[in-house]
Length: 525
Image (cartoon, rainbow, N blue to C red; front, side, top):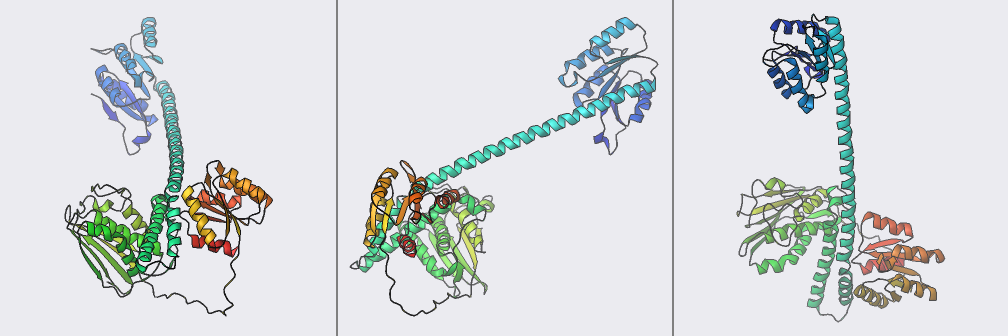
């Protein structure tokens, strides 16, 4: 039976040496001889026992007695060499029989590295074994280094693959962003044009304002849904101002009114909070409220109940609670409910499971917190958002001496936009504001127009059918250094904006375009 000797606390730094002999006294003698090497000596009293040890461990060297009953050393060596992990393990045969040619020849034919006759000289044996121990350690070190290098290469390849996947994702999101934003521009532009009609009935004007708010909110949702990575990294852009939380909450409720009525939900509104002024981004706060209300409506069955409550549970905090009697959240899903793409095992058509993740990131960006509670499946849920209130007031405009209205600048505008509806809507609206506008749908048409007449402003889409608006800007600016360039695009990634500025565009507006902002930028120039 094998025995693992000389093991102690530092055994993990030692290597194993297998000694095989059927005589216990000789096993003890080998242990004494090899003790100075300070390695782990494993003793086996038969070939069978030696093979069992080799199945469990690797050895730096094997000292193998030739003459053993049942299975002699040569037979044992032959079986050892059949095992892939031990086929190169050094074997030193030891024999008391001086049948030199036959035994030595047979031993070397079985892969032995040495053949020693008894009695064994301890110094010689230790020296030979020490060489194999050192060789084993160095071989193991090389193996570890090779494995570490292989892991490093694998990690590098995985990182490179992840970077390629991220780049592909960014390119996909940029294209998707462009495709989703572009149709919103003519709608928003047309709504703004209708809002400016003086004879418009009041109820129609209110409806148009609601349409405009929803289009603007949809554009903001596209920003967030297509750039969740930026939000998760805390890089979301916020435009802080003093806002009334109740007003934003009512706007969000107005957007969800139709769905609440359609599902015949019993709706309870309790705006009990008195301190409701926040220093926040109004569009983002409204988006948070809309996400939470929309989520409650979506997961509440027809005829259920929906409650919205505000309170000042502490003097410096505004608490907004949105509760429902809907499907609820399983206990195991509750800790993950704010993770992206997590819907708490509540699959529902029309949702990606991003709303709560976005809301949590936005609330935390406003130094607030959000929590979720639910007794369980089909027992409803409650989401509580807490915001710090502000005591700041909006700064009043400093009175200035009236100098009369500033005279509007009449400018010659080259508008390049391949989306037909957007081109037509922007052209009409800018002409109404007194601009001379020449529309083009591609770079070739724009260059032909620029060759015939001078323009003060270039308003150009970035993605055009025959090239890029960046190339167009660089071409036109080379001959007209004072040309005001305004990029107009559905591409809103950081690299897109940077390339616009590098090409000479002074401004980069993301679709859908705020015509008032566009007009202001041109007049300021």
